[in-house]
Length: 289
Length: 326
Image (cartoon, rainbow over all chains, first blue to last red; front, side):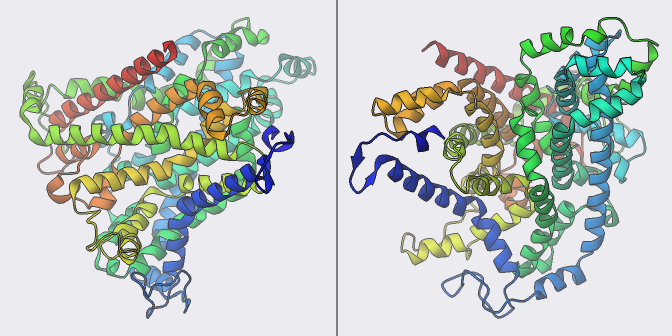
């Protein structure tokens, strides 16, 4: 802001210093842009190229000369893509639901109410965050096995159903609600559940958006754990299906592979772009701080 | 279990300052008296407590116990073997190779992930026209699925892929660089992918931190004739030092957790003959293979991985506070 506005008169060369800085800034931004979304654009372009077009080498063009959806047709015909998408969506909905409901309830009790066991719960949350998933996955697998949940959606969902970090996010969010608001509602005679739903939940909208996006992305993206738990292909999520696709003979045509990965990226990009305004707002208002 | 969520675990831990904790404890005046009836809070929190304890804390204790047994992934085994698994670790060259790979990963990735996102954040912190577009675009790789983008990178870096053909076209190389078949290059390619996908994520943390660096400092420095580079080094960097430490720890732990990048870029074996396997990769291979798997031994490797993450956090912290004194 300030760098752009308050302009010292000093000029070097043709432009005032601040204009030059701005030009350099945009140049760098564009360069970084090429690196950050270049691979994604290349992927999209390759997936749309016709069968006769070169993907690699000197003849390869930036944009498809003979655009075709053939690769997408192939991927849906040869691989149960629709099934993978359905499975991924089920995993995402399960995870988002549990990550919204339970951390909200727990975060509320943790920040707004006094009860025996509150501090113990808080420390359990903190301690649980010290263990990286990969260092406990052997035990998690044996636990899931003993519960008879190997090769099931519940087995994939359960260990990550409620993340401690989301409880802490909701706790911080509710702690920031001014006491007066609730006191007013209490005078109106609203019960606890009513106050929670009518006052606290709306106040937490920004954080909830962050929680929804993060858990959706996490569940959609997850690879190692479903890879360990799921055995039969009918239960595969998109990530697993894609890895399988890349190991199959279909991967000899990169167009097909790129079409498959576009399908895996687009839904989540759409979700993110739709919600991104709230997301960056939520982040700025301190939801992840 | 979900990757970004767990990788964010460290965030909340480091990012919940004692001040806020204290404030919230005393802040809710309406909560000064114990909640009545007493069982309502327990009811509301029960699902969270159950999952956090059952799948967050118990598994660690269980892992330590398992590491002294010969438990099998399909059931059976599980008798006490004492320190045998740990003794085996010491002479297991595959374990040491995986450890070396994981440490190499962290050593290369952490500095990049501490510095580059900060530069990026500095570039997009000011509200110049179009900045919203740039911010969103820089965040796009974070949102994209890892397996999908790893497949894209695999194509980009293949022998005939655009990167090699571009380098050849400009006459920089005569034969293609074996990005995905040479073990070291494979690790470096995976690191590049990790860094590329992590840039936007860590940029967000820096953006939040930069909002707290007083604007006047920049104005004053500018009046003194300090250029962008000097302003960056003398105002931005000191202003976000704590965030840098936090990101060093987060990205370090993230590096030790890498599996998917190697699996997709290097193939199911983890590079030629498993030479590029990281510790999580090795844990999966040793512990969870249905036939040859040894969960007890895998648990011992898991404990080693845990100790490595602790060591890394302590090291970053020490390094961070030394810088503070200097």
